[in-house]
Length: 364
Image (cartoon, rainbow, N blue to C red):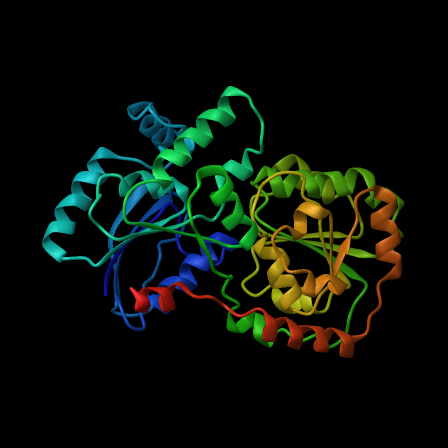
């Protein structure tokens, strides 16, 4: 097949969604020709195509000013769905669509969904990394109503197949909009496969993209409420980009906390830590960092939202905690049994079978 692939971010290992996109591109390119258009902030590294079957057609500039300008030009929908919409890019896409005889338009994230509206006859896939009806909850304020109206209008476009990351999100699409959706699992790359527990250290890991409020709010809550009562013999490592400077300066004063920033391969660290800690108070969908941590054979301590959409088959390593006391109790009860972790890791890989998008495309 020949695929026109639109994504609002640089495919990379920087965060869960971007990593899924990178791995999906590589998977698709084994048997298909993929033409890529992506958005990029000035500080982002360029995407480097791993093979000749992925061709970068255009790199679009991204910034706060660009997003404000785009949303102002298309005020009919909520800005969530318009901040990446450019009439200039649309004209380019229409031109290449005519000249390249594409079989499929792939819309990565809801931020790219609006482009599909202008290709009514084309077969289209939406990879809904987050179903916005769930992310904005069931509030009845004007903002939430506009989100649901916008998402529903766009999801109902003709010839669109919707994918989500969990059966729960499939159910939300059905209940909110009366539409059928499919679900696919995250890719677990080779570095996760190789991350086998060898010697569990007295280390706890926080793992995420910290400029996202749903990640940072939980991190800050932990250090405000749980951390002060923990023994200083424990080491806390924070992995991921985007930690606010004020908080970064604060943790530098703490003797047993390390901010590692971006790490090429964080999974060896995770596999040999006592647990990944993941309190989450907002957001929707399956949390990639939780899935990847479980795949390393590492327990995850978090609240209900942290484990949303993940099968209860893996509940023995999904350590639920709600209050400060809960977190302390769970942390004190963890065992450092490498054999048990390796056994769980094997079980996780056996059960976590990918219902892949490339297989679906073959059926098309």
